[in-house]
Image (cartoon, rainbow, N blue to C red; front, side, top):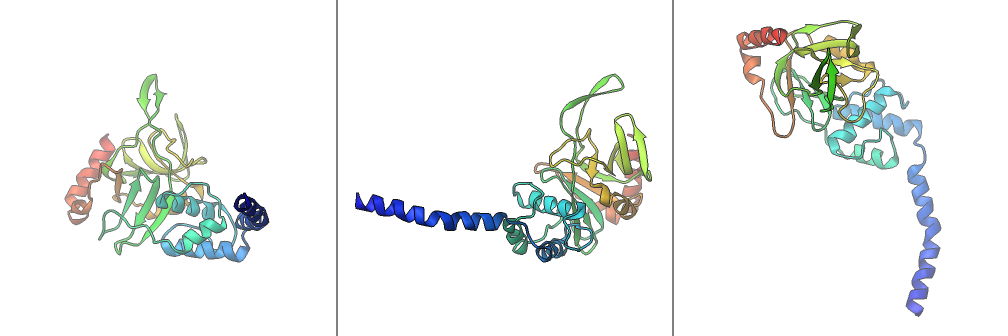
Length: 245
């Protein structure tokens, strides 16, 4: 009986300290700490935008991409716990190496812009929802095709379409494009395209000239683009095929 009483008294005594610790963890971070997180995320390869200590669209996108890559709860909120995780994380690595290309990891819902030295810039994306939708009187499924593709056509600024307006579209097969969109949810939600945050869409477009190799994969499907990178004739055939689909 005495032991139970002592345990209860000890728990009551510790409750204020536990509550204080939890409150401290939830407290807003200082601008210096936000700037630290931005710098570290940038060093890891996430696209943050300006490193200025402000929780803007770029910072939130980088944090979301980090949370997606690491398999953490995707909140877009920079807490002390997230800052600690960022401090000790390793940067994302591409599946394919040794040449410049783009990768879309459908499982993680991220896009990697890969340089020939294998360095990356990572953005969150939203791909096909997998749900049925109507297009010109026919039912289709919102699916983002997996495989290797090339950017075969581009538009600049806003482009109005039957399924909505897209911003700086980079077409990779048929009507499927990497493009900016006003809404980029944390889960698959598009009709099949790869949505990216608006703040980065124009710059991404400049980094994806016609002919850029794009790999779209999930945990069960992956095709390397190295053969296309080495043989321009193969890539040219892919350019023509993409435009015809």
